[in-house]
Image (tube, rainbow, N blue to C red; front, top):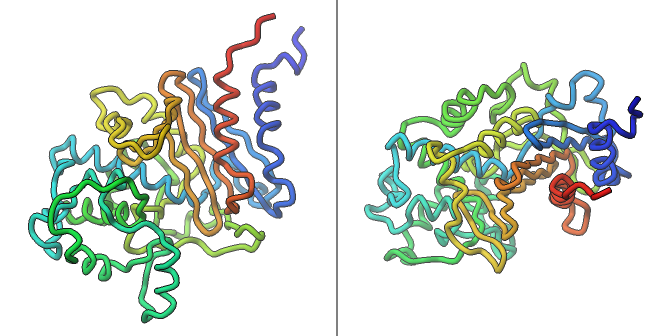
Length: 347
């Protein structure tokens, strides 16, 4: 008779707990949920003592996923390209009459962060303290009107290759352009190309009454609760909310994507972003073959990644934002992936 220690699922849970359990220590009302895809099976583990678990199963708790939204955006783009609605080398001006004709920025540059559009800058934060208060999405230092003026500046007189520079406004603009091209909102595209296609039940942007009880509140680094994120203009950069169940379905669809799937093109390296990393369409690809993206909002942090050669994937969701010096879902995900991919020790 086998004991509990011989149960593969129990052993897996113990290993995940060893890697992840310290994360929730000293975090009041923390909930850490980890989803795995390994050897054709899915597993979900959770840690923490948030009271939402008294009414909602951890698998159905809704988190803000932050910049993981970006790979949803590029997945929609790939599907639209396959349907003939757009091309990667299209100028952004084809879909926005406010942008001057034949603008040199192309859709692929937005999807790979090589458009030259600004990243988050400390000096811009200082500048905004002295500018008139206007509505700007969180993590996007330019309003849509300000961005349109920037796109008409002399900087973009001709086509130019820019180094990769992570830009929320650039990816947000891509989401807007895709919607403008079909006269739809970004959330309508999300619903049509991903939510309905994969039959996801809890992936959305706009908060409706029937989902509120399943939404968990986020926490700042110091433990203070924060209200739900609201992004109005640049939703494609980071506005999506989802569950571990839905995200595992999305990840599984990417892991199983073959040459017939439009999503396969998002995994192809397009530009080097460092010695050991490249940028695909939205996805970051490292030299170990890991295809991934992380995310953060003012009260949440997250990670999603997979390695095609081992058919192993992981999603980590937390209702805490972390300081750079703190433990993170990224570290947990890397350690869990490495644990899953280790060869069994010889007896």
